[in-house]
Image 1 (tube, rainbow, N blue to C red):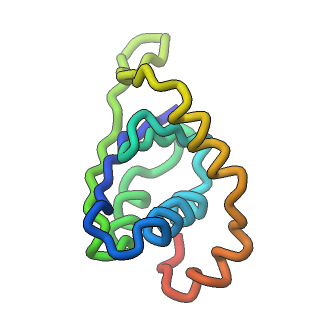
Image 2 (image 1 turned 135 degrees about the vertical axis):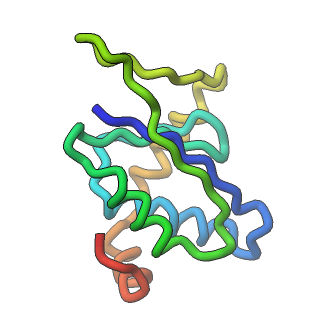
Length: 122
């Protein structure tokens, strides 16, 4: 598994909910294996080992609007037989649970109609 640490800031946005929805829709298009929320503005994304980092980085760079500030980095793996990831953990367990519920309730078919015209293909 290949993990990425994504931190974003949309606090200055006039349309916070829409910008967050758009961000999550973009990640949906990348076919992640899992996505977790450790803090209100940090996501941990998991992809398979063959997933090309440059493709993800370019996709985000080409599609995220200027009002979403972000940083993304690949989380290092140890070079032994075990695949260990260095991840900090938030004590607020409800944060990720609520985030997962939010993802489950998102209607990506509707979001595709709203946003797809403006997205460079992944």
